[in-house]
Image 1: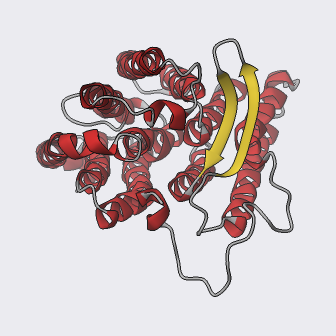
Image 2: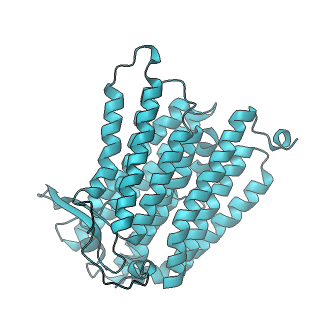
Image 3: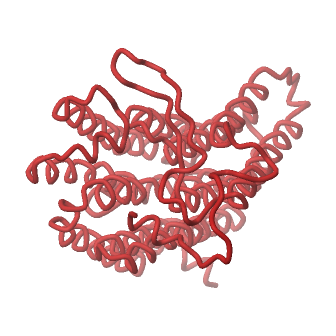
Length: 390
């Protein structure tokens, strides 16, 4: 039984049933969370829209798509079995059998928490985007694709699939910043693409190295991470995962994109980046370093703790010094991620329980802080704290 299972075990008077048992069938439940937004994006992309006549309809499609995802998540939460130590709602299909790649999805308690967070953030992002007036079709197509890729990265149990979804999330979000951001949107978009591209490249290199070292002819996450690797290889792999996660969460000193992106992106994009997409960094650490390579996790826990403490300290001091409300919101949005990593660095059931819960609460807090600051600056037509404070 893993620590991830312990976190979510609640007392129950009756024994657990089969995974996903209930009124609703669940063989493709996780796929729905990925492909419903993709299908909705395709529908919006192909709709005729002469002179913006159906802009409102496109916004409604995006909104009700996200409400549908919340309903699917309600079903998943309602039928989730706390006492099962294995992944639930699993889907496994051969995709590229020549190299051992499978379309393998699954979720445990931590993953379900992340999915619920992503669902709530999705609804908030559409509500925060109702004021978009230019190129409405392209905006909501990209927003839905970003949400689909984030959900895919959460539920992927094949490392090849994880890298694809992880990298894919950067593309629509970069285009959203580039197309609908503020005056410095070009620099912000390139920074986002650069840092997240670096993280994706590092993650891909680590996965390929694991694939080569294990010789398992499989990209299955459990197969690669529990292959009985030597301590040196475990540490090397864990360091690679820490770098990849640090570019996404972000952690100091790989935080350079955060301020500019959250300061220039439109409010609906800000909540996705701060609340859901960036949380994937901590989730990657949880999956690969803490649960996947526990021996290396113990050895590297001081490194994680130091990075987290530096991030929290730097972000707090930077927020105190700035007079730009959106910069302040961006810095404060970094703090919950650092606190999550501090919990992971404890390498204990209590610490991991706290960090998993902070994935959810911290994601909501970061989205709320950054989103409110973005909305306030747009409504007031000023980003100066001196002006806004009266």
